[in-house]
Structures are given as structure tokens and as C-alpha cells.
Image 1 (tube, rainbow, N blue to C red):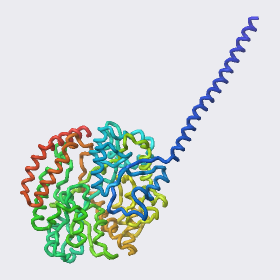
Image 2 (cartoon, one colour; image 1 turned 90 degrees about the horizontal axis):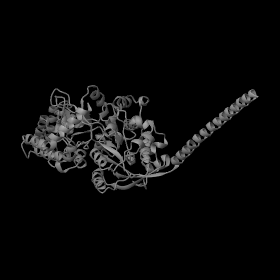
Image 3 (tube, rainbow, N blue to C red; image 1 turned 30 degrees about the horizontal axis):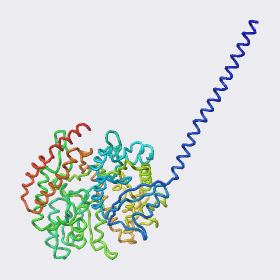
Image 4 (cartoon, helix red, strand yellow; image 1 turned 90 degrees about the vertical axis):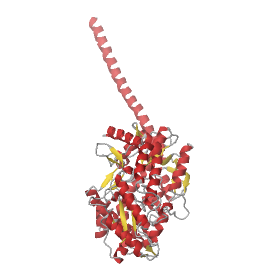
Length: 558
């Protein structure tokens, strides 16, 4: 009897164990099923989200070089249509400014009235102000979730320095409007005039002065009103890519608002260094000799450039793209009527000129804290990078419009969010490819586009592409880059943090005061010794405080 009871107990235990195992198995399957269902639902929702068109608003500047296809406008065009079709993002404009200057003024008013669009391009000071005012979104999570691996790699080719400038207290507050920081200035000279007057190519500042005086006094353009060098009303602004004077300063080892090493482990501002005084003295001497247009202080770059087109001036400093502007006077009725050459910035002494460069980011795309679809902005970013890096034939619409053909209309300016490569090798590749007529060595879309344009000039099928040949050809601007890079003939700004407190408050005042004094010296309204008084005033007006803050940042960032 006892044994029967034991047998019964064992049997019951075994049954319970089997039942438990069965239930465990069933529960496990049930749990797995429960896990699978949300995942499937999530995938379905994600698929529906991808197919759903979302709308994002922005604000845009127009551009004098942008030409619309027939029937198109900023609000309705093939680029906007392509974004909506390809990635489901509909772009609208709250407003469009007539040009970049008006854009900046309208943007200030938009920020002041707290009427931001879903996303906008702002400068570094505005990025900081909007962050502190809690008007823009911390996009750390939305960027991590929606930015593709390709996008993340594209924006960190520099080691992440540009992205770091948009980060506050560990929060990503904007997308850098990145570009290659190794963008240099050059000296452009009328080589047909050099030949006509039997002058040597410029290698030193002394050569430049000789050429400028000869162009003024001998008037090879035959206008009766010649000058030595083209200068416009905002010559020290980094945005003045042609008719500026930053390169001239560099030739005297002086720099515009650059933070440079002070020799004692800290940083100092370039605007108040003695080399600037030397450069200003040289410019004053040129002005007194009539080598500089006496009305330069009231002419913008486009207006001053008319003197280049009309054969009044044959010397100008500018960025690599300067030939695109020179083409207005150089190519007339399908014929090249002006010959230009491009040269490194000459030096005042035996030391090479150091081209001043920044970090490669001055502006940022920020997202309104109230934006309903911030992911739409990141999708625009992803798509733009795809179309720049490896576009399909169909995706040429983003650069050329619906006909997919290059027609010199700068149609790409319609892309509302644009970022550039932080590093390129155009100087190594393009001049060689154009010279040897070998496209097989081309690597990027930009190189292929430039090569095609340059070759149209070479084979005579489109003389209007002369400007691209002067940029990308064997003696073009890009051909000078490898030597500058190899010899490190550049000076990068050592300060890359957000504007300091005093900088945000006082920099505009300091810059205005600086330009006022610089202009008076150049135009011979005051003695060059006025520069020394400016240095003292700069320090008192906040310069010393800014220097202190910059060095605190510099010490902490080492």
C-alpha cells in the first residue's frame, strides 16, 4: 500500500512536470509571438511612414546666377518635385529674399519675431542665440535615427570637428553647412596685357606693384580711365570672394579676424597685429597713386567687377571660382576677348604667403523646436548627399533641372539644404585629366562635371566654358592647390568654438570700427599711425575680454 502511494506520488510529479514543460513551451511560443507582432507592426508603420509625404517649410535667398527653367519658380520647380517624389518630403517657402544680403536681414526679423520656418540656414552667432533662447530643436536623437551611415561618414571626414562646433553641452543643435576648408585665394591677372607691356608674371608683392602701376599709367585696355587693382566696398568680409583684400593682407603676413598663436602658448587676434599696419600703408600708397578706384567704398563686388569686364582693371584677388565672374567680360559673342592667368598670392618678402582658411563651416541648418516633421529635414540631408556622391542619371535633376543637361543656370542652388565635402583632391586629379584628355582618372561627380565643362572649351564646342578651364585646367586655380597643400602654405583659424559671450555682444562693433579705420587709412583720410590708436580702442571696446575668453576656451580644448 505504501509503495502504491509512492508510485502515485511519483506519477503525479511526472505529470505536473510534463504539464509545466508543455506550458513553458507554449508560453515561450506565445511570448515569441507577442514579440513578433509589435515588430511586424513597427515595420508596417515604418513602411507607411516612408510612403507618407511630409511637409517642411524653409526660407530661401535668390541668386543672380540662378536661372529657372521655363514656367518654374522658387515655389514650384523640378528640384522640389524630385524631393517629394523620391523621398516623400514636400518643401515650401515661408518667404524668398531677393539676394543673400536681403536674406540675412529678413532672417534677423524672422528670428526676432519668433516666426521660424521648420528649418533655416543661420550663422554661428544665431545658432548660439537660438539655442540659448530654446527656439530650436536638440536634434541628437532624430539625427541618430534618420541620418544614414553615408551621411554620418560624409559629415565627419574631418574627424568630427565641424559637427563639434554645432554641439552645445553634448546636444547637437544644427547641421553644419560644411565645405572644404582648404579653399584658397589667388591673384588673377590679364596675361594679354602682361605680354603687351612686356611685363613678368607676378612672383612678389613688388612685382604686383610694378604691374598695377603699368596697367594704370599705360592703360593697355585703352579706356582712358584705368586703375591698378579691383577693390569693392566690403573687402575684408570672407563672403567677398572676388574684389576683396584678405589675400592682399595675407601677402603681408597679415590676416583678417583670425585667431593665431601668440608665441606664448595662447592665441591673439590678427586684426591688431603690426603686419596689418604694413599692408594698410601699402594700400594707402596705391590709393594715392590712383591704382585703386576712388569710388570703391560705395561699390559692391558686382559693380566693381564691371571695371574688369570693361578693360579698366587687369588685377584682382579672388577665390577659385573667380573665372566664372570674369567670364562676363572675357567671353563675348562666342569669342575669348580677354586672357587671364591665375597665380599664388605673392609675398612681400622671402617668406611664403600663408593663405588664411577657416574650419570649413560658417553656417548651420537648424530645426524649429515646433517642427512637426524634423525627420523630413534629415531625409533632405541624406538625399542631397546621395545626389552629390553617386547620382543616378535620373538624379541629375537635382543639379540641372528636368532636362538633365548642364546649361550654366546654377540650378543646384534650388536645393534648400546643401553640404559639401570636407576634403577633395580636385587639384591632383582635374588638371592632369584635362591636360591628358583622360577621364578614366576622375573619381567624383564634381570632377566629372568639371571635366566635361572644361573639355567643351578645349574641343571648341562651347567657348563659354572658358571659365571652367581657368579653374580646372592644367594652369587653372586648382593646379596651384597641391603645392600649397604640400608646403602647408596656409594658416587655419585656431578658434573654432561657438562665439564667446563678449564676442556675441561686441564683435559686430569691433568689426565696424576696424573697417572704419582701415578705410580711412587706405583712402588717405588719416595717417597710417591711426592704426595704433585703433589697437588701443579695440582692446578697450571688448577685444581684451574676447581674447581672455578665447584663451580660456583654447586652454580647455587642448
